[in-house]
Length: 321
Image (cartoon, rainbow, N blue to C red):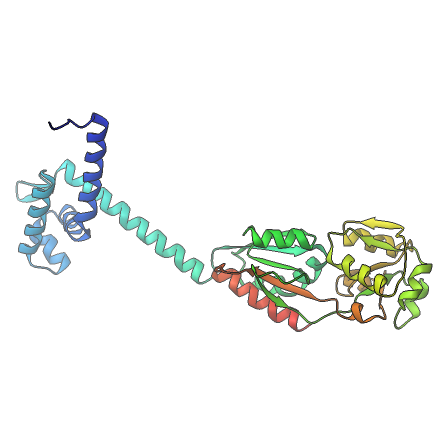
């Protein structure tokens, strides 16, 4: 015995059939119908479209049979579309507008007139980043929104791994197969002090001299602190910091005030150095000479045109430092 479909199922089937009809209609008969409405006749529509009038007539007739609705009717010497015909024309024109809008937006993305780039940056890199590539990128492409998220190295790695940002820039970390890493030439890890500090007159600071000073450490989340610990452990020095901070700006402020010795690269401390508030002296140790940085994105992530362009600019700028 044949079972009767539930009303909701019948409605669902009807909707699916209607959607299938709309997919099968195609653009050409709707284009002909819209032109008939604009010109007031089949022959005039055919002339405007440079096709034979019989082609237009056959397409409209076939569409009427398929939908089981009259779409055009003669009124006097003119041909007008029916109410249902106008619904189809509105549908067609809406689709055309969406296609034009989509095409225009894609062109804007392609020519970097629209878009967003998100960057995760180790806190000590922000000044360098803005001063170098970002300034040039933003001047060339002012319509691109650049979002900057900062934090210690583990936080930046997490932002890249979770696709919160497109590009990460931080201190060198352990190799990660999930990351596409672009390393940069090592910069010296420096003792950063006030100009009046005794280290300021040295060309290099022996690690053994650090035990006599009040030291400013970063939190363990910062990659630079792991380099500091490696230097001290290798030199078999046991020290206790006077301060432990979570921002490089805080460490620089304490050092400029003569309250201790901070540790970072000269690039990170550049602003204070240029203002004459700080002096950066390289630490005389092989590990300190290998303090390097990296730029990265997640393996498999396809960068947008804007993000890819910024990646290349960052690579060029940082490689020239």
